[in-house]
Amino acid sequence: MAYTELEDGTRVYSNGFRYKPVPLEQRKYRKFPPGTQWHGGKPYGPLPLLPDDDRDMPATRPDEEAAQHTLGCTCDFCKVPRVQRLKRERLGIKARVDRRPRRG
Image 1 (cartoon, rainbow, N blue to C red):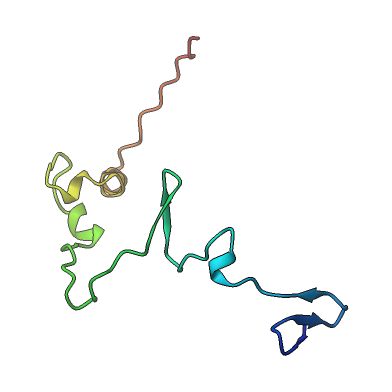
Image 2: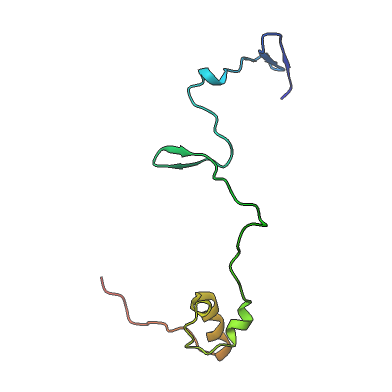
């Protein structure tokens, strides 16, 4: 919606509505910068992040490489449920289904 601004800062919109912005010092609720997180009702400003060049990213491997490990492998990468599911599918092992009725 278009508006025209008067000398005192009042905005007059095309439907005749007038709005005068409140200065930041008089606002009841402050404006917080983007990225502000709330924990326990308190705002915590945006965290300073390291540039991508300075960040140390973890080493990753494709799922296909982990699928070549044995089914009982306990390395950190093989513990991921997605990789375990892929290994079972490759070997033709179906997931166990409990067909007993639930009690309770």
